[in-house]
Image (cartoon, rainbow, N blue to C red):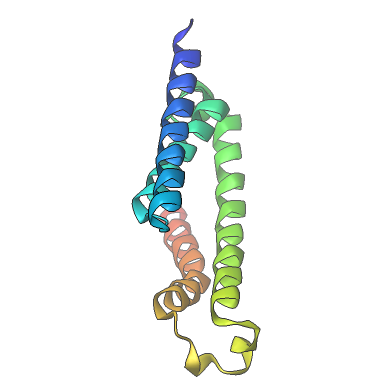
Length: 134
């Protein structure tokens, strides 16, 4: 078995173990653990990086060449806007659909602040990067 396949299987088994533990805790205690969600997200990112680039950290020859950099640029832009939409949908579902009429009554303030800050973070980063090229 080659190294890439071994790493892929190890990551998949790790994810399976964490998910089984999370399901067990949910069945026995009735709670979804934050650690399970966080660890699963990290392992899933490693799994996707391994599938995409052949490296769990996303650093390989393929990711460093011109096409790899173009893929990274486009995917980061798409991911940013997708993340903003996901935050909005989570806020909408957690607050209810009547939230739009009264923004002063938002109860999930940390998520609301994160959503609002996402509107100006991308332009600020673009401004900083543009200044480096001028």
